[in-house]
Image (cartoon, rainbow, N blue to C red; front, top):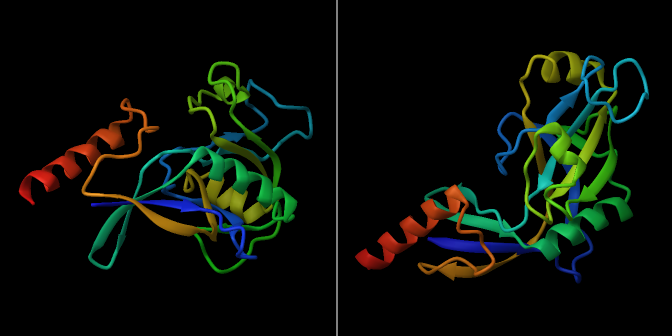
Length: 204
């Protein structure tokens, strides 16, 4: 099975992240935390109901399963690509670009108000919300001023996390072989991929 690295091509003007979508099943398999007025942990006294969503936008070196027609493969982003993508997102002024379930329609009243990379797994503020994510993860906080999205979707628990939209170049990293050395052997999904690859090598 192919394992493909996605990266930002500096020669392509559109390369990078164009928008962040709120979705029911995020590909990176990490739910966000919805902060409401009754939350005991507060970021700041902004208003009586903060309407903030905090979660991971991209996790480095995490295999993500994809299937196109009959073609099955995994993609991943390196730490360098995650960092570069997070910076380009802000430099390009995309903070207000948001969609739902990757719809073509842009939604008003949804803005990324915080963006940071985890540099310490134990001391990062994401830990205060029960999130345990690896170093290099791109975290975002999105302010939801869109009443329909907040009341009909967030409060009804219909959306679970963030998913990026953008343009990336790709290269085949491995095919019917081991994953890159910088993958964590503790990753449950990784072990499943390795099992599949080893089985494929045995049968080939």
